[in-house]
Image (cartoon, rainbow, N blue to C red; front, top):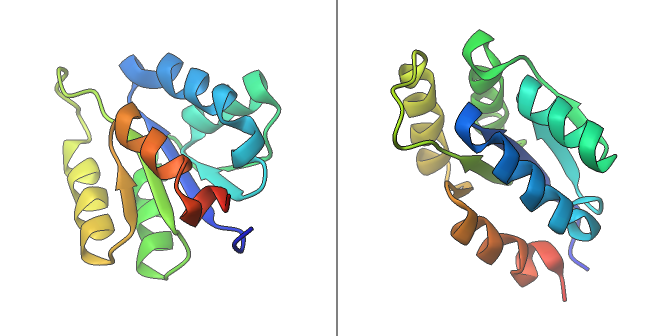
Length: 128
């Protein structure tokens, strides 16, 4: 297997259940990596799956900015962010900044389940 990756996990409220289900289905792969998540998403995944996740602040309270800092410092390899495209977000500016940083620093960025499935099944992450 390739070296451990640091994977960021984030989901808007309407997508929390979906990312928890996704993390549960991919637990065997995810547990081989370093996981970091915004507060509510990370806590929910951790409680449901038992995965070891470093929880940051809630996204609107600075968690998105903390993930952005990890990207800018070269300490995040993959960002899995289940985005709710149908709801207005009060912290949309933070989400846009996080998206911009992931793009600027060439971080693998999955913003929906189909892309997250491709990323997690890739040899870059899965190593098989």
